[in-house]
Amino acid sequence: MGTARRTDGGREHGSNWLGESEMKRFGMTIRLKPGNEEHYKRYHAAVWPEVVSKILECNIRNYSIYFKDDVLFSYFEYHGGDLKDDWGKMAAHAKTQEWWAMMQPMQEPLSTRKEGEWWAAMEEVFHLD
Image (cartoon, rainbow, N blue to C red; front, side, top):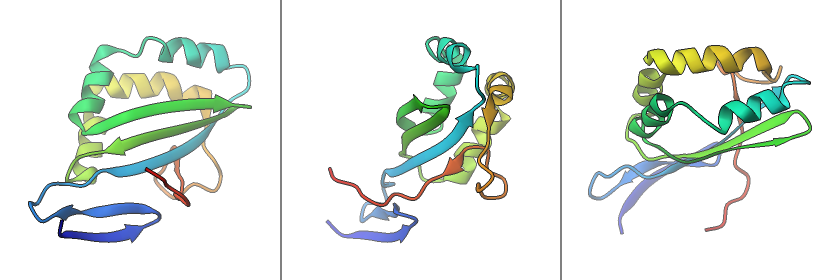
């Protein structure tokens, strides 16, 4: 059906002819400081319900985090219409701020990340449904 799109770093943006938002895929990465693997996994085996609820409220679905050799890779799909607004809501959420404050000391951002990023956004170079 009629779809307006632009491609930006491999992620599709736009809306269909009904004005519905299209899903956008995101891959992000960060390093986990050595010695934090078990602690990080333990936290993520029991993510606080308030944090999960806020993630869902902010239109994020199909969210996964992978670990290998002190590298974390996250994948998620955004189903909203205003990413900046939704991320602002998440960043303003007190329980999410508390969660991030516990995770950040275990993480080491990439030196090549863009200004303002903690997790570095990755470019999608291939996708197959």
